Image 1 (cartoon, rainbow, N blue to C red):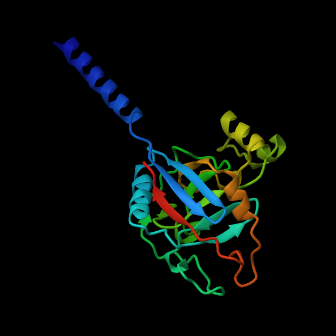
Image 2: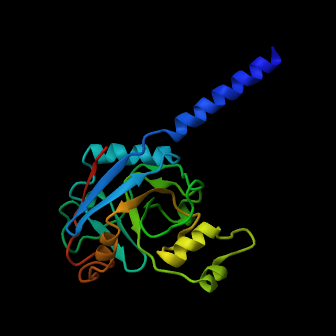
Length: 219
């Protein structure tokens, strides 16, 4: 009887594991003046995945802009106040809802990852994410010496992270600090084009010419 119970539990656990593995991977299209980025969303960050899907399906992001663009770092957007904003209007104040962080499943910020923006540690010690604003990483290629200098007794880059950072680049200074909930799988060159937009004519890191986006789920 005991053996039968154990086998039954093992079978049920296997079915649950198979169910998670076979969970549908959702994809979204971020349309910009430069072309489209196709992103896949990670199923092991379910709160961020479902939140992004909800916002995309409601058309929340349509007409918003990438309001904060820093070359060799990232492009941030999703502020609802950016729709039709005046050229000299400061953007990025985060009054959106917050989501508990889901940092652990995907910790390294290789080029093309989709991550949630958030408020600084000083007023956000638990690293809660913004429900609306996100960024796409551009970064740059690192070498072993640069990566070694960032390691501490409590943090080491995995071999896989090193391979990505040395080959396609990224922003390792962000590791373990933001929730990554997706990544660009087509149109990676679009982030380079966005991050090369001239900025600062009117407001800080905002592109001089608006980079307007539309986000829609495609499966």
